[in-house]
Amino acid sequence: MNPNFQNQAKPIILYRTPKSGHCHRVELMLSMLELPYECIDLDMGNGEHKESEHLSKSALGQVPAIEDNGTTLSDSNAILIYLINRYSDDPSKWLSDSPVGKAEIQKWLSIAAGELAYGPCTMRLKRVFNADVDYERAWLITDKLFKMMENHLQTLPFLAGNSITASDIAMYSYTAHAPEGGFELTSFKAIQAWLAKIESVPNFVPMLKTAV
Image (cartoon, rainbow, N blue to C red; front, side, top):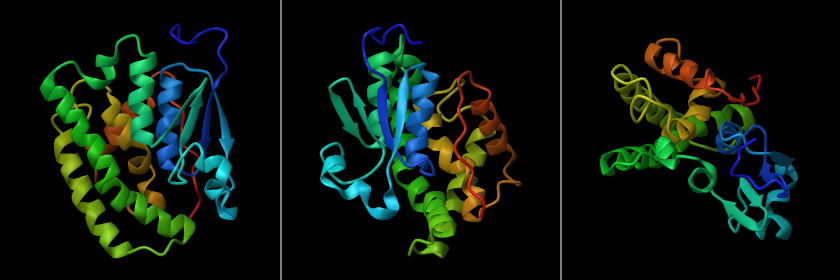
């Protein structure tokens, strides 16, 4: 267990739905930091995430959210930053210690909240949940994003350099599960190699696969 986690503290509670890539990136970070945690799965279909009890933890009624012994946070990328700064022995491992490195990581966090969400995440919302979204627009965004990532990863093993960072955690889940949205990765060899590197990191936990 992470030595920075107090022995008498309760496990961190992760409010989630197991089919969400946003939730998985938080679970992945919790596991890689060797933090004790418990998952509470919300009944999203019946609107449990919009009830007052959850709104007190996530004002926008979104998942994931966490409770950490008196600290409550929502937004997956914000939670990543919190967990790293609170519990990592060396936050610079995940967030860099140089101005350029920090900026590069922030760029990928922004892409995770932008193009990744509007592209592969949205395609998957259509195929897995039959959401009312613009599938063709999402396909174009995904194609552009993955071509850029493929080119980028041909010269670097990880998104922000030579070792895994918060960038990779934020970008992994919806990239790995893009085929569930109808976008195959077979021709993206560098992306496939990058996914395999993340999956080989100690304490990696997979995201629930969905048959489509």
